[in-house]
Figure 1 (cartoon, rainbow, N blue to C red):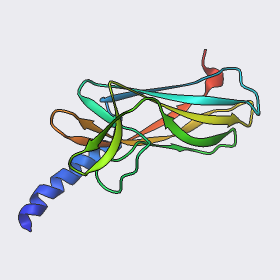
Figure 2: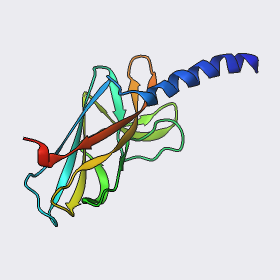
Figure 3: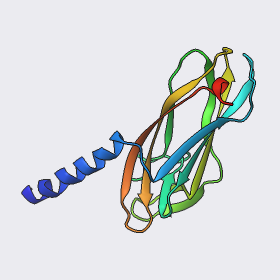
Figure 4: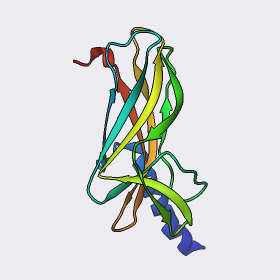
Length: 157
């Protein structure tokens, strides 16, 4: 039991550190599919992650109780927009995870996710969090992350 704790405690502390910082393995950007939106208009929020070579990002379109954790988006409600439907991944790769024996979808090099929204107010802006898991293809190390996003497209040139 003591040997298990000796191994497990540092591993948990190391894994938890991944939540506290922006990950360099994935650089996120975001934009709207349309500009000059008025209340009642619909558009797509487009989230793009550029991944460092050798790293994978799990997609949003599979379920896992254990093992690989799908990416998920959390939008903070502010009364200026309404989320319509679920986040849609664009062209993820698919495979069966041999360790967990489940089908997963993931991205290498670049990931794109789209979320349809309806604009409720002229001074709209978007904030929230992206939660997910990055895994290294060579050594199998997986790192959980939580990335905040905030943007006001009405101020973007």
